[in-house]
Image 1 (cartoon, helix red, strand yellow):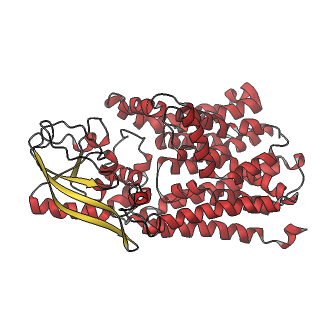
Image 2 (cartoon, helix red, strand yellow):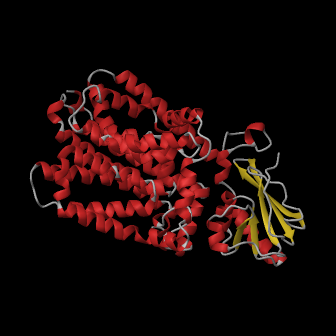
Image 3 (cartoon, rainbow, N blue to C red):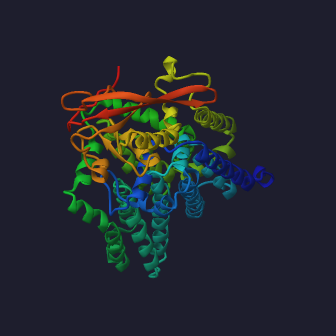
Amino acid sequence: MFYNSTPWYRYLSMSVFLGLIIHFIFGFILGLSVDEAHYALYGLYLDWSYFDHPPLVGWIQALPVHWNWYPGWLRLIPEALWLGGLLISLEIAQILLDRYRGSFDYVSPKAVMFWTALIIVLAPILHVLGVGLLPDTLLLFLVPCMVLITLRLDDKLNNRQPQDILLWISLGFVLGLAGLAKYTALFFALCIPVCLITWHGSKIFRRPGLYLCLVIAGVLIFPVIYWNYQNDWISFVYQLGHGTGGEWKFKRVLTFFLNQFLCYGPLIIMGLAWRWRKQLPGSFALGSFFYIPFVLFAYFSGGGGSLPHWTAPAWLTLAPMAGIGLAQAWDAGRRFWIGLVASVQLMICVLGFTLLFFGGIPSISMDHAWGKKNPIADLYGWEDAGNRMRELSVQYQVDQLAVQNWTLGSRLAWYAKPLKVHVLDQRVDQFDLWFGPLPIGSNALLLNWSQMSYIDPVSDQGFESCEIVDTQAVSRMGRNIAQFDFLLCKNWQGQAEPQRSP
C-alpha cells in the first residue's frame, strides 16, 4: 500500500519543525506588535486583572519581563503554546480514529497525524498567534485541552468507570485558566455540557467531580471578579460594548466570512466536507466547540466587534476531524485537488513571511501611495523610537510622554519604560489606570507616527504649543517605511479631541 512506503512521520516532523523555526526566526526579527507590547506591560505592572482582559496573558510572562528578556526570548512562550495546541490536536485525532474506526474505511493513523498537523501549519493566522502572545494564543492550548478532557470523560462514563475524579479536577483547572485568559473562553466552556449532556443525559449531574470542577474553576477566576468589583465592573462593561460593536451591518458579516476563509484556508474545509459526508455518532455535539463560538463571533462581526483571530481556537478543534477527512480523500484519489489547495495555502504563508521580512512590499517606500498604509511597518522601529524618547526626556528635562491613540502608547510605554505614557483622548483605558491623566499645566514629549498621524493637539483645551524637536526614519532593506516625529508640547490644559491628519 501507498502508506507502507511513505514516511508520514518524517513529513509530520518536518512540517512542525519548519513552523517552529519560522516562528523562532521572526520572533527575533520583528518588534513587538501593539497587542504584544500591551500584554507585556501587564507582566510589568502586575495586577489581579486589567481593563480590557483578564490577567493570565500578563502573569505568564511576568518573570521574563522583570528579567528584561529580549522580545525574541519572550516569544518562546507563544511558540511553546502553538506547539502544545498542535500536539494535543494530534492526540485528539488519535482518539477519534479509535472511537470511529468501525464507521469509515481504514486510514493510516500516520497519515491522519500528518494532515492534522499540516492543516495547522498552513493556516496563516495561526502563525501570528504562534509568534505573538495574545489571550487567543493561550486559548490555542487550553481549548484543545477542554476537548481532550471531554473525550476522556466520555470514555470513563461509557465504560462505567467511577475513577474520573482526576479528569474533573484537570477540567476545573483548564476552565479556570481559560477564564483567566479571555472572557470569550465562556463560549468554549459552554460546549462541554453540550457534549456530555448530549452523550449521557442528566447522569453527569450525579458525578461528584463535576461540582469539584466548578469550585476549582470559580476559585481560579475569583481574582478577575474581585478586581472588577473594586473597579466598578469596568472590564465587563467595556467588553460588552466592545463585543457588540456599533450599528449592525450584514456586509460586515460577509467580510468576516471572507477573512475567515483567507486566514484559515480551504484545506480544513475540504477535509471537513469529505469527512461529513457521513455523520458519525456524537460528532455533531463535538462540533459545538466550533459552531457555538463561530456563530457568536459571526454575529458580533455585524456590529464591527469581531476580529479574525478570535475564532482561531474554534478552527483548531476541527483540525483532527478534517485531518481524518483529508487522509480519506487522499486515499480516494483526490490527491491533485488536495495538493493544489495545500500549495495555494503554502504560497499565501510564504507571501506573508516575505512581506514581514521586507517590512511590506519590497521596493515600496512610505512615499509611495501603497506605502502610506503599510500594516507591516507597525512591527519595525519602535525600539529605536523608545530609546530616542528617553534621550529627549533627559535633554529637555521632561518626564511625561504623550500619544493620541492607545495603540501608539503600548509600544512607547514598553520601549521607553519606565517613563509614563499618557493617552490624550477622552476614553478611559488601561493607561489611565497605570499612569493617570496628564497633569494640568505640564509639558510633555509627544510622539507622532507617519502610519497613524494626528494633527498637533494645540488649542485652548489642549497644549499651548507643540514644536518638532527631532525626527527618525524607519528603514528596512534600503527604504524608509515609516517616520517618527518627536514634539515638545507645553502647558497642557486637560482636554483634547485627537484628529487624524488628512
